[in-house]
Length: 352
Length: 274
Image (cartoon, each protein chain N blue to C red):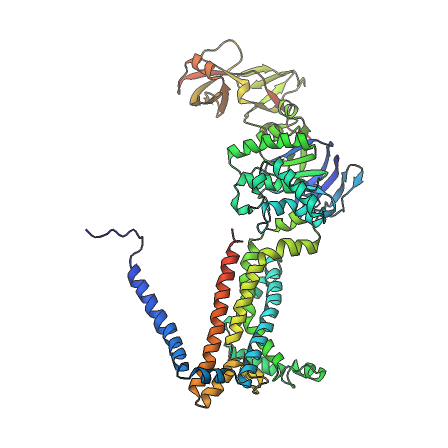
């Protein structure tokens, strides 16, 4: 079942949590709402769930307008960040809760619950109490509980936020597989870019209650719509310069910039990802910035180099392969030449 | 070589000795004296002293009125705790502080205030008594005043447990399809039951021993509105010390049973705190 969000706005007192959000979640899709804290992503999820009523706009499940339908009539699954398991009930009864309130016959309840416990690989945990489980196990029980009544929609609010890195990684993979096998339309809220990219097939970037960009992870990462998206998705170097007639000027550096062919010069912010910068020990003829090596972290799949530009007050982050770094033979304090392989230019919004 | 003490703070033996001495002097000694005095009666005399119709009526009244008051307190206390925890309203903190007033107020003052309110010419009594509601010199009067003195217990035992229940639990239940009533009975109430029971037992125990406030409103008519502590006092005035202590021993037994029950309930309720 698809979910359509049309022009939804929500205010809490003076603060605007959602500001005219329009969004489509395709049936069977797995969409991540990604944004910094205070971006409205959790409010949007709660509006979709019916836990909050929007001030304006409407929510549709498929063709049905559910804007004013209370949460308990929407038949959805919701997983809370802190699990919200019923502590006085066993794992079995937690999972069975949605079936008990629907007065399913005992036999079908048993059948469905053992099916779900199998799905979360916790067949033997039925009689345990939530307090006897680890964080990862609790979250899996919360997920099984949410899926028990075969909801049309599954909503997850920072589901792995409270877990440690390794468990989080495992559960992400597992959630992907689960989504693949159950096929329920899923919306996930996260502030973790990596998590969103790894799990979701569509990412929606929210900032200050507005959708900044929506698309497939690769599309969003490679073609960020604006400086916020660029900045939010991973590490980035920001330069302030100007563009003029298809050329970009950064201090003494001049690079071609064919996207901006305006005749008159304009101030521009230039965003370059660390892996899109290259380092050389000598000037190699390409436009480059001389900079001093401040710090190197050569451990891991990439060598992370921090440099300070010799002119101007600018720190640079560069990522090169460890082999390349070895080959350069540079040490802390040496002067290196940094050149961009690719740059994205965002002109300040003149509408403001 | 002296054994090395592994404790951080010194003085364990001194404080333990003081605690035991204090407990013996102030609690065990008077209680054993009470039991000893009662044993000056033969078993048959003891039985006669504690099973007179007047004594039986007094137990019945004490237990019945205390039970009724504790039940009322359980319901009212739960409501008050709920309102104090779940809602924001002006003067909430003042109301919260007022809950403890029955703890601090001398119970005789409470008795005096209640009697002045509920006598046939009092502010409330003048409307209730003509309606046939006997609010003075009646078991109802005892229940009313005991409800007042036991009121804070349920509020103060339920409040912390309620505060620890995340509002998310209600949302989770609603999303899973539970009606409001199902959410209340299946999700909210079960974790609160041990706390409510503990508060109920505490206010029940308090009501059993309450004396100061009751004598002002009860009328103290033998076999009608005379509570057990009042009967003990009456026996003392008749210089029937052994009979008085025999009655005291019975009350003591009931108190012990209640205390044991409270401890078991508290242990049970701890399973939900985490």
